[in-house]
Image (tube, rainbow over all chains, first blue to last red; front, side, top):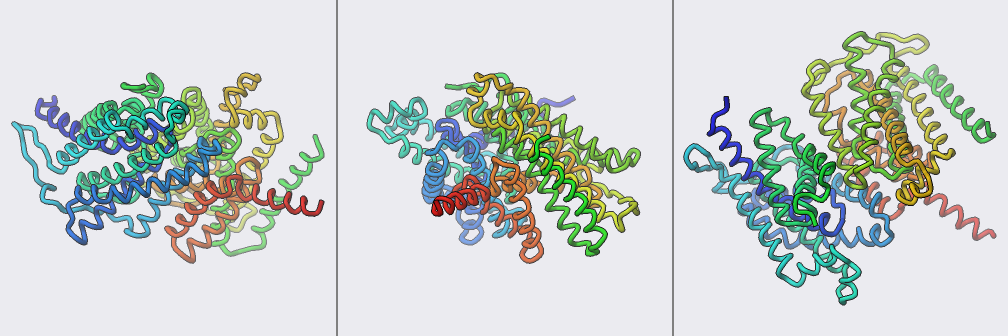
Length: 290
Length: 319
């Protein structure tokens, strides 16, 4: 009924997509997975990154990935500012569960509306020499617009993994996740660590945004579709595990690719929510849970 | 029946009669349409607050419950065109059952996971409705309003009256819940679920009650929607605005009392109607978003809380 080539193509497309999903979710895995900051606005920051990339690509011909990397720096400070507001208004008073969640939801909505007001609801895309080209191994086609984000996403996850396990700051972040009080007793300020971690999370979101607009055209409200995806990957992989995030991304990518190949693209969105619900019901700690 | 309760019921009855009397006097159809939207938000915000404000479970899927009410009505209208009150009952029933189902999710899902599940529910329902051609599918379908209705000079006035009645009833429901042991139990769940359970509060029953009532009210608010817009399609019925507004209004008004969502919905809803006409619909969303973020950060108890603070400060000065 379905040929081997058809299945292989779906599999490869899914793996490529999965690498990108891992890049999208890495920042959330850091802020939500490790530090319990319910940043539901994460996808909105990704779309924000896409539009920054679009802007410099359209006007100055910047390469999208280079743009993403450059914008990651100011975005880090944006993340720091957002976390400071969040901490002072909610976490300090213990009101994060209800109002903190609403705060991020409001932020999500605000970013979306501001993008709509500035750029309208039309789809935007970027130009780069590798977009639109593809290569093939045997009968399996590999589109560069999927391969490049896959590659960058993989590198991003690897860098974050090394950062968390090998550097002082990374280990401090893991320490805060495990036992915030113990870290404090060692003379490290957990709030400062969380601020840095959240900033890094937003910086990776902006890089992921530059990858998103390479994969396909972007419009402001597209972020909603990614809320389920990023949370599904983060939870499936096990909160806070970079290896888990990579594996979770690949699983979601392949599952979505097969679903859209067999049942049509309109059902792909249900996959992430399905995985999320099953995972929460069966194994809430995820595949690589701590 | 206590004196307070009697007074409340009398006020409610007076408001419903008042809404009817208005329709015999005023003619301008635009005002009815605008008032309908504001009243619809009074219902949605009050319903959201029963689960979100009283019990502490944040629902991002208001649009799903609302649209299920609307599409239940559409399916019924397509089959045998029952009278409006039956549409309200059925819309409330379907969304109420949906709420009951979501209620069982609270057994395993807390905090952000519950919220994402409600959002997921709305997305999945929208997908199902978009693929169901009987109710119009993704392209939508036109619904014919009944030509005339007894006692009212046109159908828009009738719909306004219906929505006003629903709004009064839902605020009354919220008030009754708040003043009874059920409301106190819900507040205990919101403040500390485990402690509440230890003290013997029937937390599962109360949570199921909250999700069911909240869902049913949203469904009832959605049931007349297709008659109101005349052309219904999934994107507008499942619009994220419903989720954002029904959450922003109680947050702006204040979440712990029945008055909060009412004040928030009337003020923000009216401001939105004015902003949509004078500015643009995007600007009005920007205003709502900024107000929402501003209020959760700077005035966590909403307008009602602010008034309370000012009043107690004035009282303190006099003393």
